[in-house]
Length: 144
Image 1: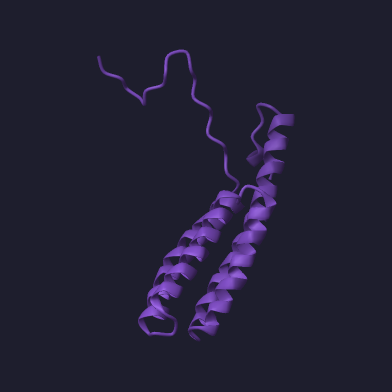
Image 2 (image 1 turned 180 degrees about the horizontal axis):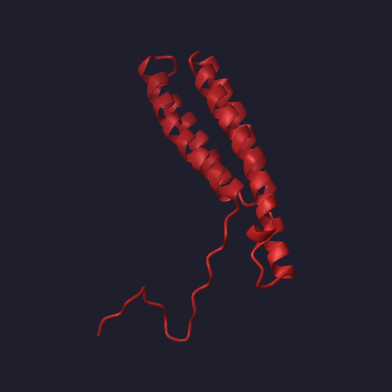
């Protein structure tokens, strides 16, 4: 007997997947990119003997843990605030490697852009959904 989908216990239904906002999705992508950069920062700082290997590994692990907590909490306001604090910490890595000021400035600019534009687009999409619920059967593109 072949099943065409993932197995679900008899009598149980799957919980529907939660819809993510655009802000949440964009900021999660930014945190993932920053985690990749952080890996190379740790290698650079330890390899250049700026700090010892154990300190670099533990500091990097703590930074990764903060990023993971922020990614998990991104659906709530405190997760976004923690993500903003991580951006400040990323700028402070310039104290160890001066070139990180440039890299962090680029990431900070993209973070702010994603936060602002994502919020604008999420608000617009919510307004369109509300209009469509109030006017069933009509296409909002006909009224632009």
